[in-house]
Length: 256
Ligand code: ADP
Ligand code: MG
Image 1 (cartoon, protein in one colour):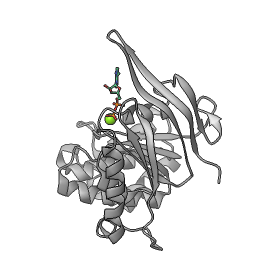
Image 2: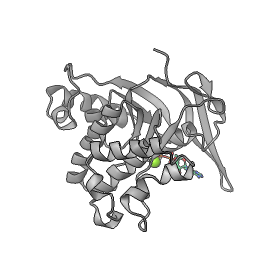
Image 3: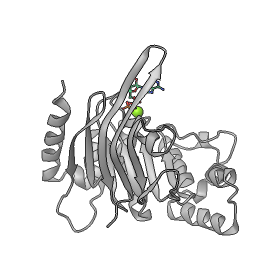
């Protein structure tokens, strides 16, 4: 299968008045359609920078980014981007928030709105359509933000620490929930997290980045040998889980 995303010897540095900060160095990797890939690494190692490059918000200094074999400029691949904060607008209802992306892109067609209805039914948020964000729990807000992103039918989803604003208990439930929705939708996903357990419990593959400038330390395939996709809770109690944890922990500690 052709990769949906290819990064080829990608490097990036920020230039400020204080000088140059090398953020990423020589990153090469590829992601296959439908894969769920996590990126872990210490704070400041360039994870968010990497997502911004893929989203086209920053231009690489060196190297190349290909989406479905085409450069970002030529590619018609539709990218969805979800951040740590849900960025729901407090003065709009949940429904109005969910259709916001479509509205901005002038895509409020009957067909797209039907699709929004379907998503809201399927992912149990229809009852909150007329509620305001402040009336929802952190988890439900995050779910609404995800549905807003999915409403745009992205081919590729970028998630930057989407659960880190939630408390630990909620985080377990919400990451499980969101991972399930993403799996069902089949959209290819790149998830940035600093939570190792979260990465192991929901992804197919983990890219471990080392300290600044961010570089690839290792790429680890997660396989619990099960026929069905394990829920993140099932994964966390699987005997193999601890082995993956130790292996990746060692990689992360290597720099220190
Ligand atoms: P992470 O998401 O892994 O925590 P970032 O990609 O946000 O890391 O940042 C990588 C490095 O680049 C950090 O050292 C950070 O201070 C620096 N950096 C990030 N954004 C900017 C910016 N706009 N200007 C200058 N330096 C930046
Ligand atoms: Mg970051």
